[in-house]
Length: 482
Image 1 (spheres, rainbow, N blue to C red):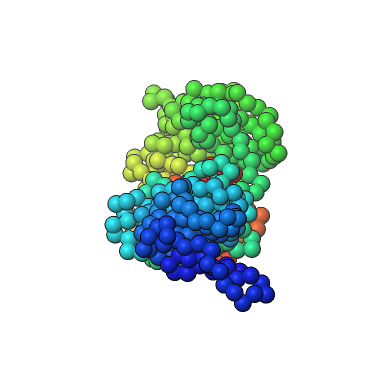
Image 2 (cartoon, one colour; image 1 turned 135 degrees about the vertical axis):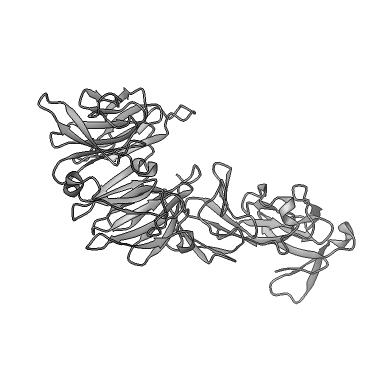
């Protein structure tokens, strides 16, 4: 049995003996100092001193020598759940020491300027089942470190690198039995982070070898037969089956594809940004001299209603209804002409269980019954921030879940569960934002999984929402966590 005194003397007591021997004295080498902490690393006893750096006691030759790799004073040591050491000394820099190999790496987790107003440096370190190390800081958010790839990633509560935490002042970190990570903070309560690494398949439509923005996805739509259509920023249109096997690729259009749908005859309708609408092999574009042409060539949404009518939402020209002609072509009836410009910016459409069409615009949510609008173009209901009957004007996405509930994603006002009154005169909504646990208020897309939970894509990450418990889990899927 070995003992280490506060002054750095190492003693040994042999089993069965009442004698205690002094094997080495730190003061003989380092002078007048004291031990701040210590740890067993590989086959040596690493001793951190208050003023003279770090020393090692060798159990083979009973000698104390300076540790050349660690030159820190008054160090403190914590151990992760795998037994590895993490040393720090109020500089914002933390040292990772592999207890088995003795390998040392260091990271500047908190900038020096931030350390000036952090009175108490503190870290918590947990390694998950995939070998990713999670490090919480007090004042500079959350870090993940991939030991195999030697890669560090930083998450903060706000700004460009905003991630799954509500505050940068973190107090504790732990891993549960399912592999989830729990983070507590000083100002924003508790966050539960689910890791979406299992079962993920990465699809690069253009090529995994290109390093520009060609693989940026502008369109992702599932058809009635299970086929998945993908449109890229490069103008590529790709068709995959339900197993992500390629059916059609390398089909390029001169403009980005923003919408795709199919009619009752299984014709594919493709809406582009700037080049109009393609139905089958025929293109339709705006023509100022033709009142029956498309109202605008920017097509952002296409909807087939319960009566198989095809509605085309344009970005700048309002809403168009496609009507077939005797020659087998289409003419377009225009709606919302002469209305507020924001109402003519149609980003998304969805149909509810009662056959009402919900239209997301830059002037709020516009709701109408198709038969009523066709009969009278003023038969619609508008709910907006401007009119004081909704929380936002900018509607980014609409989703009807398996229970028929309508969810609205906004630009800046988070997620909203909406219920239209029977007389359609009022819209009741329940708001969920950052304060309720949503990772970010800029909601871009909403989907539902087989368990009835909603996956909310935002500008700064993904949240999973349980409608029954009204609770969020924050999902991380980064280049570290694949």
